Image (cartoon, rainbow, N blue to C red):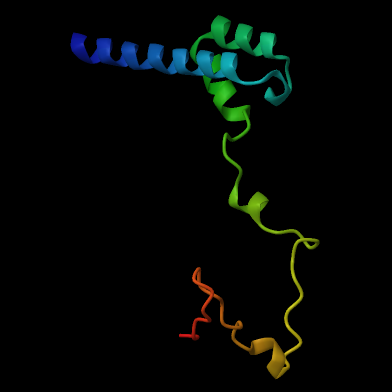
Length: 103
């Protein structure tokens, strides 16, 4: 039982240190709702409650799939549908200058 309590305490301290370091390394302009110094004080002062709060309100580190989708200005118009739009690319020249046949 003592070992289980020690492991739980080690986990909680590790979680708290992770959140404290995460707050400290986060740029000031990415800290939501409070200044960075206030977040450091909240996480350091309230221990686990502050760490859980930081994880709940911080921005995700990576962009989401929805933010990577092209907007209306980035889409391209579909081809007109004529036979000239569906032709294969012209043959390319090789490094030796000879024309390559299409595959």
